[in-house]
Image 1 (tube, rainbow, N blue to C red):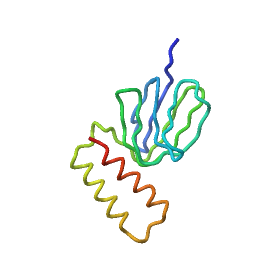
Image 2: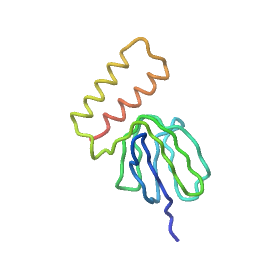
Image 3: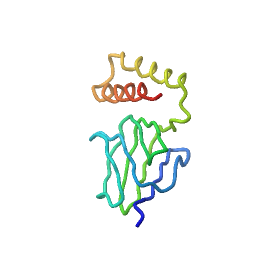
Length: 126
């Protein structure tokens, strides 16, 4: 019996990923959420972090929403990139931009929280 479920990742301008997997790990505000086949229905928000699909696909996201029901996982993300496409220069530029924005005194605590997650996640990408 297959343990796979359907997954689709969509950004505003295109479909990023569509297929089947046996596991997805998502960076949610509640913490890391692992989705397996027959998981309870779920609707939640993504925070900056790494989405892992199976063992081979990884994506960096900054935000989005997640819906899981009837063994269908739908991820809507405004900013998402495959880790395969993020080189060191691009990663360092994103870190510098986030640190610059974080140093601004006119951002809310929520924005600081999100930027800190973004910076820490980017630093972990090899």
